[in-house]
Amino acid sequence: MNRIGLDIDKSKDLAVNLNDLLANYQVFYLNTRGFHWNIKGEKFFELHLKFEELYNDLLVKIDEIAERVLTLGETPLHSFSDYLEQSAVKEAKNITGAQDSVSSLLEAFKVLLKKQREILDLSADADDEGTNAMMSDYIREQEKLVWMYSAFQA
Image (cartoon, rainbow, N blue to C red; front, top):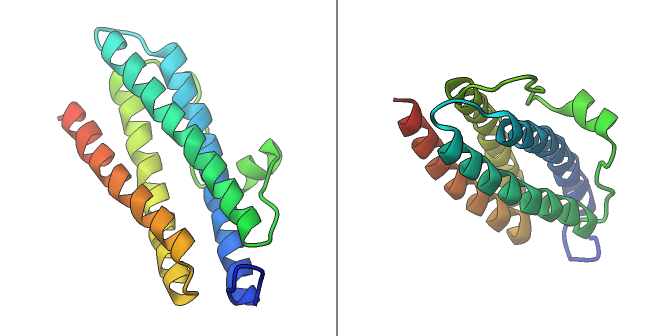
């Protein structure tokens, strides 16, 4: 057992998956900052604010994920080369339009939700309520955001 009473091997597996999630969040965060800075067009004011809300939330989650990796007794990834190498969310460059920005967000949420559901299953198997609760909260919040951003695109 590790220092919080969880199976060491299961904790290491969870930390590997959380580090993968962390890499995806970091790329998503940077993409969202770019959308905030570069959005143009008639939806500028609306999306500029929404993107700021989103990147602030992502920054909090990035810290929570890294700290959860530490809580499990492992080291969080902390280099951009690792993030870019590992992330399934790809860099979004020079996107200035509302529809393209929102489409990129929705694609990133699809990746995050899939990974978080996988971690949810792993954390349930490991009796890791801390990680499980975190993933449940993230999934619930992001499913609502997917609905809202999808409604924007309609």
